[in-house]
Length: 256
Image (tube, rainbow, N blue to C red; front, side):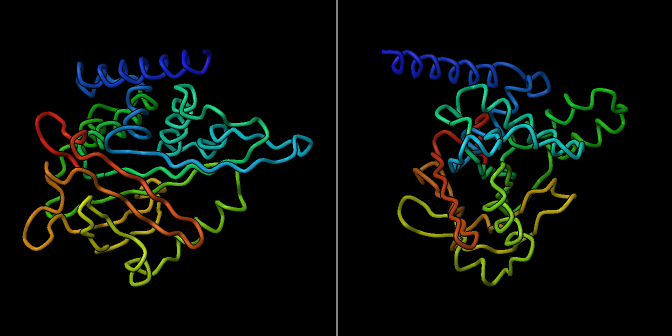
């Protein structure tokens, strides 16, 4: 009974969050509104892995406390996103003695993702001069042309898994990645990786996976695609997230 009540409550909170995002402009989103778009939305998902450790080790399972350690706005954004995801119930079931790895997958070329990211930075840096705010907001309206960019950012406390994955992303070869990284439609057709950019300060610590927007002269994703799967191999780790195309509509346009 308690589990059923909790699930119902979580669904109500989710619906309220989605409604809030649609009913007000992105410049009025709260931190939780923006975090929802960045971690658990039609354009962003989080794949979580947990490993139990002995309580006596003194290791905390929280993936939130370290996310903003070095103080830059990008880390604060993802740290706050992780914190809000935890508070919203996304991390239910996590044991206090567990180590975590969070793989954040987002369609950067989807406008709401860019809006959420810029909004989080603005909320964290309220004293930014107006000219800098205006300059930053141009990123929201940027035209990515014929490309689809998927970002992958790693956070967590399990260094045994995080360190190899981060090393892989830092040194990955494009030709090797092409064999293990792709977008796949529900009909089985795949879109091969076109280019790759390793994590850097410029990309706020996220790897950028760049795909062509078209396949055989037509958009790879359209309203009839049903579902698109993001598949990424990071050595031994696999990141697999499925996105429902029908949910990716935003302001009357398919955003991805």
